[in-house]
Length: 143
Image (cartoon, rainbow, N blue to C red; front, side):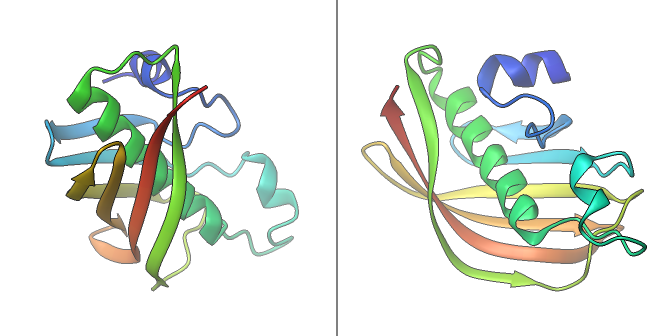
């Protein structure tokens, strides 16, 4: 799935669209996505000068955007009238810094759904090394 297809599912745009490609997907089960970390991303000017590190909160946001893609692609929802909100984080752990030039592979798996609230297990890897894990909650709401 290309960037244009992703933009059909997510309302985010540069510089806040944090998914570059969907690598694999199974309806109501899992989604695997890719984020290419580039040195020219605006936050690297201040995080940290001379030692750029991809912010942990943006790793979590990347994972949350992957959960939204999984939900919208699985349920073929009316994307124009709905938003997918990132509503909770549990057990977030950062294992290794992410730096410019890294390619993040984001895996999200649906664990539980109750109405329009969903619980996911998520992980992010660089070069087959886990850099972040978390349990995420997302909710679909009208705009």
